[in-house]
Length: 342
Ligand SMILES: NC(=O)c1ccc[n+]([C@@H]2O[C@H](COP(=O)([O-])OP(=O)(O)OC[C@H]3O[C@@H](n4cnc5c(N)ncnc54)[C@H](OP(=O)(O)O)[C@@H]3O)[C@@H](O)[C@H]2O)c1
Picture 1 (tube, protein in one colour):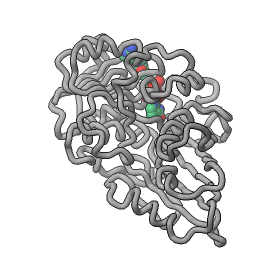
Picture 2 (cartoon, helix red, strand yellow):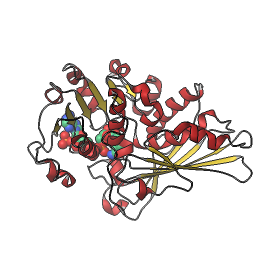
Picture 3 (cartoon, rainbow, N blue to C red):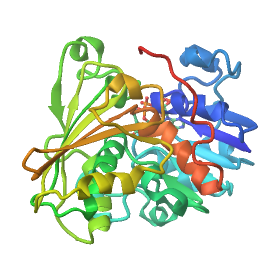
Picture 4 (cartoon, rainbow, N blue to C red):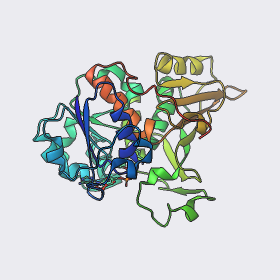
């Protein structure tokens, strides 16, 4: 297959490009960047020195999409909406967007969290691509909206809970590393502000909450309410560590453990653990590491998740969804080993 990665000089685009270049079904890939056009890819992404000697192309998104079987976009928010028309005009077989532009089908939820949608007529062309949950139902999709990084970790914690009686909506506490904020340094993301620090942001309205709410409401068949996502910036480079807490409506009779087994026992890219996952064990992989615990009186549940925000939370999940959409084995190109300790 012939692929293009648009916005390949960013953090998510770089990790995506690493995986695309090593995917066995991809014969050729071009990587575009406005700011790095003509620069060797390995100068911006040193880890790719062993797999490519190509340079970033300064093509427009439409030019990059011409003759491509797959087009990935890893652009800053709003850019995908702006350029999607010229990409679709080229008729690529599959478009995978890593941004938030096409994740929400509910226009009201979108407006509440992001404002006016710049390309509302294109939203219906995209399937929300939470790969570990939706699985083979993604087969045949022509447009995939890869979930956000916090949203991925949160929904993987939530999904087994949809069948359980809950007394209150779950509360979710999560911490991300600095790559979650992208390649451009800001006052809250550069090293002195992050290295020995931890702080909450997006309080009571983090944008990823919108997609979590949309999916949760669909799973439980209710139009309102849902989990609260409390996100934090942590003093590490990559990864998301998340803990969910919920009260059960009736004491657990073994249904909780069964719900986790039912949700994930056959999923190749989820590992159910007996003890809380470590972030460093997820880094560099497309795995979601998940454990859960029930309180001694069996009325409370806690779920712990660790993922790599740039792989499971971005490029890796995008490839997993592509595999499912095109009928390849789900983990194709994603079972590489990673360095440890990282
Ligand atoms: N970081 C994460 O953990 C993460 C996880 C999941 C999803 N995402 C999503 O992935 C997207 C990228 O995030 P990021 O963290 O990688 O941001 P980033 O590091 O700031 O990279 C964004 C890239 O987009 C490029 N770009 C923007 N407009 C372009 C255009 N019209 N044509 C070509 N390239 C363009 C920019 O590169 P040039 O200026 O060189 O073109 C930049 O390198 C965002 O929508 C984000 O929400 C990120």
